[in-house]
Image 1 (tube, rainbow, N blue to C red):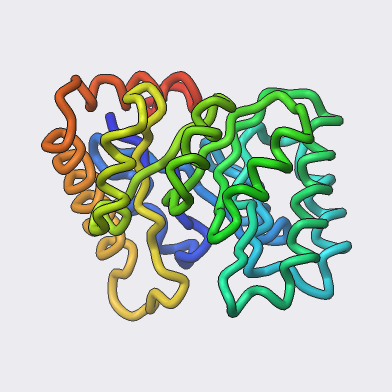
Image 2 (image 1 turned 90 degrees about the vertical axis):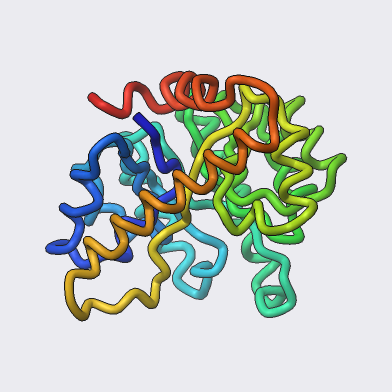
Length: 246
């Protein structure tokens, strides 16, 4: 069974989620973008508690309090991270403060968390914060876009990368897919887009897209690498997330 390790279940209307959750041979790790929306997916397997950098704003203290409240109910964290792209530079300092606070909460808790991390033009800063936190847990950089040196730092830190078709559309993305040890690879789709329409059976449309995306990513990885990458990815999934079939 394949696991989509970065899926935005909270972007789907509640009555449209069954199509994705019942896919044959596929399971998902539901991410959230705000602690205040975690309750919508908290009952699902591997529900992840997140505070996405795009959503960091004036109410960050309220959201961080909600993060702390929900934290005891999960060991899966995501989506968290930093985004230093030009349109998000205005909140860069606040993003760092929020991520630092989250990592402090995780360290104080002491459990072994799996963290799905967004890092756009900010991989080095995220890695610095992870190293400074000296916390238990495993970072998974979703759709890695940093430098080769930053990728090496991530691997040395015990981290993983999760790969989707769009990452493999770039020369650098394909190079990274070859460079990373198979034991540190995971699959993801980053679906659905937040703008997904509720017209028609959007749940089935997204389910079909997930199936295609995972098959495409795995097929490309098999072409790029000589190792038994599918078997290794399934082992990686079980190591971090448990048996997707359970």
